[in-house]
Length: 425
Ligand SMILES: [Zn+2]
Ligand SMILES: [Zn+2]
Image (tube, protein in one colour):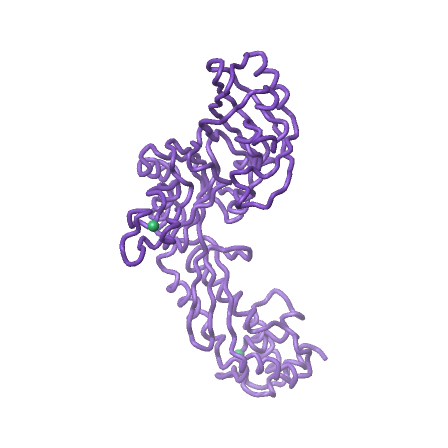
């Protein structure tokens, strides 16, 4: 059957709008919108039959829903007012009754059930196009800034605003600051114990008053005018360790931001003022959600600087020999005793890429270790009673202990975080 013959059969089923008529042949005729194609078919059929041209004022298939494309676009644009977005996506919930009408029309005309295009697809595209014209934003199918869902049954538009992300590196310049909020164990973070303020935390609900998260995320949340913010770090240092030099990568995720295009230089200055010298951030940039996964790959390599104390005098030459021995070595580590209660006991191997340092006096040294992610560096120094092999203590033949530990760099195993494709601009 030709398109014209099928179109004539379709018009005999009852009143039909141009869009529903044209939609039947969306897979057999290209380059026209469904409504234009339907109109052209109707005109052609009227000329052929030598009858006056007369469009239908009603449609039994879509119940004239396609007449409201502009209205839906207006509803969507209004629903998203107040939110910054440059990408969006449209989904449509079509009532089962209308879907059945689409199937019935095809059956009546003698076409396949999936002939042409679905009403839902037409809506997504046509409303989508008009939202773009109204807002200047673009359709994106991956993870758009905003997701619209049109519900034809209720006339409602649901707007889901996806998170925005800011990447950067932080330095922690004071000890005893955890990376993220640390709820008090005594009261499970409630601040109360048997109806009284919890003694463990003074009623705050937190084991520590401040965290890197609490010193940074609220400023980003405020700048983006979001509902909440979450801190994602590329691993974390011990609470009592500093994070120095090039710092540790992180991403702050802001939920339901009203503002996305923030000035990251200004934001950096604002965060640093708020964090008041306890924490510093650097290199803030807007990022995509993939950057969260990237920083959460915990096997990033790290460089540590530490103060080490020996229980017997050590000669400079012996220390240098031991450090040379450790450079490039594969270390076998049983789960450290200090964490054995939390993790399954197993032996694993990690590389030491570089070990350098010098004596401060014959019982103290300043050591730097660059090692693979997951290397237990305190145990690399102490040997953990022989559970780590080789170790600095073992090679020197004296007891050795880390008295202060700082992380000075964190890198991806394969490439620097800043080279990742998930940063904007
Ligand atoms: Zn229709
Ligand atoms: Zn408490």
